[in-house]
Length: 408
Ligand code: NIG
Ligand code: FE
Image (cartoon, rainbow, N blue to C red; front, side, top):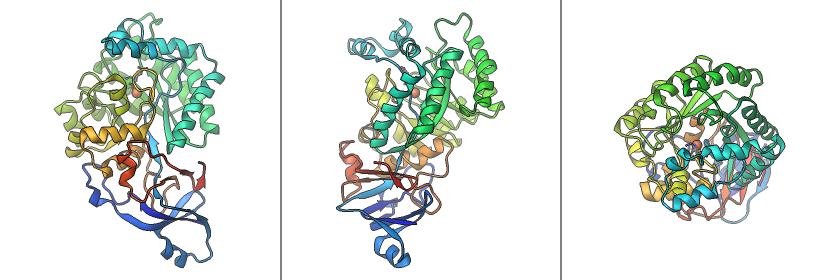
């Protein structure tokens, strides 16, 4: 057992609802707090002096200066396993071409597929590891990574194996997702439906047998798969017991309604969600994961985060780190910028980066600082938690703990 502290403030994020709008006054702030952990779990957070009284024999991990303690961040949507760069696409967009026009003319995701195929599993592993390392430094201890730039049976498996290796060695917990349905590869001769059928028949069994992932994602969009095609595919995934998630409403509305109908764990993007999508998300159990990094990367509107929260939706924020639409990869910066444009409270932003993001990954064991939860937490060198969002990502964590052990 170990007592870490004292911290100027601890924001435990406990006792907050999973869905809907939040006011900062709802945050329970422990002043001069400490946290007791054992075997990777949290025993208790409370006033530091009270904890010393309660556990007089406990080993202490002293903290100096003014610091705020938060649950560690959870990035529930990334594509950090890829080869090459899309600086060329970026320059074209600055000259007026759109993401979809570039995709149609052979750039876009397909160019990253070609560059990813050139890398060995070893090289892919190392490039993803470097990005994961940055994310850990920035306070993320649970990181989702999608396959999605292989797009042939062998290449997909190569990506998943690289992610699997990362899972084994990383100091963060890595959650992998199969995104073979990112687009129909240009070297596949056959219809979209035939390609999706191939994934169901040839890849799903391997995912199961090799325990590579239990999560299936699809890009539902004009340049990728229609709502109807997505529905058939996701239904099969669900029937086989996979958890499903959808790239929804990035450029056109409607996919969130489908995601909720099919019981997807999350619907991600939502820049173009309309009233029907918002209504469906508010009535269902699907987490709305917004990706401000993609709006910033593409110079496009943000997802209607304020409206979603006011409608009672569970809102998570993720980085979408990928070479095409979201090359920045700094989740805290992106969330803070989204907050200014969408008028989100600090409580809403912090919840979207922690326990609400955990729900997007189907995880209930983390995201708040309370008894029984995984001891993943981060501290920032400030005495006022509002500084963390106010400084728009420039204030970085000065310590990161995973399962109670300090890793940064
Ligand atoms: O989430 N929207 C689809 N997939 C990625 C972009 C992938 C790419 O352009 O390489 C996204 O934004
Ligand atoms: Fe994405």
